Image (cartoon, rainbow, N blue to C red; front, top):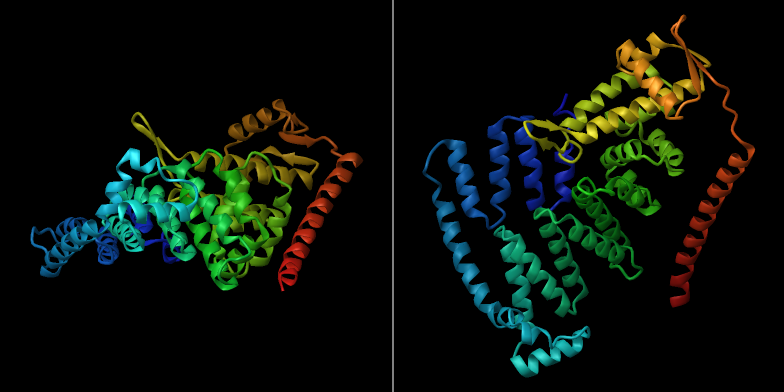
Length: 438
C-alpha cells in the first residue's frame, strides 16, 4: 500500500534532477522499494550530472566491486578538463569578485557596473557569460555553495531577463539542497513575483513555472515554522489552484494536509472542500478522501478507515514524514499533529448531526480505546473546545444546543462577500491593463 501512494514518480518530473536525490534517500531509508532499484535510479540520475565520483561509489556499492565502467573513468577526465577550462574563462571576474575593495565600487545600476568593469578591469559580456557557465557547472558537480554565490553575483550583472530567471531557479535549488530554508524562502518569493508579473513570456510557460514553483516549494514549506500557513497562501490562490487541478492534482495531498494541521481554521477551507468534491473521481489519495468522507459523504466509518491509511501515507511521504531525533527516540511530529486534528474533524462533524452520542461508538470512530476517548473528550470540554457533558451512567455524551449567533453569521457572509468582490476587481483590472497598453 505504501508504494501505491508514493508520489515520487509524479513529483520528480517537475524537479531539477539534483532535488530528486533527497527523495530517493528517503525512500531508501524507508525501504519502500528494493535497494538495488533505488541505487540504479540514483546512477541513472547521476549520469546526467557531473557528480561522477558519487556515481562511481554507488556503482561499487550496487555491484559489490571496486571496478567501474570505462565510460565513467573517461567521463571523469572529461569533467575535470571542462571544469579547468571554465575556471580559466571565469577567472578575471571571479578574481574581481573576491577583491572586497573592488566589489565596493559596484552600484545598484547594472549599466554603470557593466561599463565600469569593461573600462577599468577589461571584463565584458564574455567573462560574465563565462561566470554563468562556471556556476552552472559547479552546481552539476554538486558544489552548491559555490554555485549559489556565483549565480547571485551573475544576476547582479546580467541584463538578459531569461538568463537571469534561469540563474534564480539554480540559486533556489542550491539553497534548498544546502537546507538554507530562510534564504530559499526569499528566493522562492522572488521567483513568484517574476512568474506572476504581466510581462512574463507566455501564459503556457507561466502555468508551467507555477507548477514547478509549487513542487519546489514543498521542500521549504515542510521545513519552515510557518510553512503550513504559507502553503495555503500559495497553493490556494486561484491561479495556482487552477494549475493544480489542471496539471498536478497530486499536490492536493499537501494542501489538504496543511488545512488539517493548521491551527487556525480558515474561511478558505469550505471552498477547498468544494475542490475536493470536484476532484474526488479524478484523483485518489487517502488524505483528500478522508476530507471527502467527512464533509462530502458524511461517511464516518469510511473516514475511520482512511485515517489509518493517512498515517501510513504520512510516514512514507518524503515531505510529510520528516523525522525528529530526540536521544534514542525518533518521531514524526506531523503524523501526531495530523491524527489529533483528524479526530477533531470527525468529532466536530459527528456532533453537529447527533445530540446524544454513545461513547463506545465514538471511540471506535476515532480509533481510540474507550478510556482514551473519554479522556480526550473531557480534555476538549475543559479547554472550552466543546459544549457538552458526559453522562457516566449511560456512557453517552450529551451535546449542548449550539445556535449560531446572528451577528457571527452576518460577519461571515460579509467576509465572503468582500473576498469575492476583491477577486472580481482584481480580474477586471488584469483584463483592463492589456487593453490600455494597446
